Image (cartoon, rainbow, N blue to C red; front, side, top):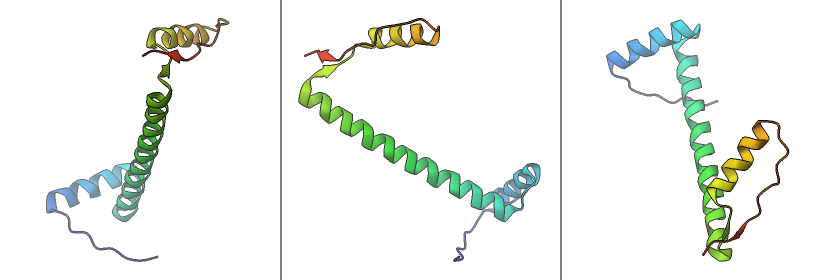
Length: 93
């Protein structure tokens, strides 16, 4: 495990210490966990961006999609426990 030094303003350092104490952690553990959460969020965001780009490219290629109103009706019916026919993509332009 390597060591990284970060410089914090006194105010932020105090806030981190207080937040860590409330969470029952050391400041070190609190900062490490915050960095890990931030990295996980950035990785998740990058994966969502990749999926969106892939789906957008597929849409541009095929011109097929499911209108939002149909998706919404399907989701509402499914959430209510009703049997609903799954909407089918079709050319929309």
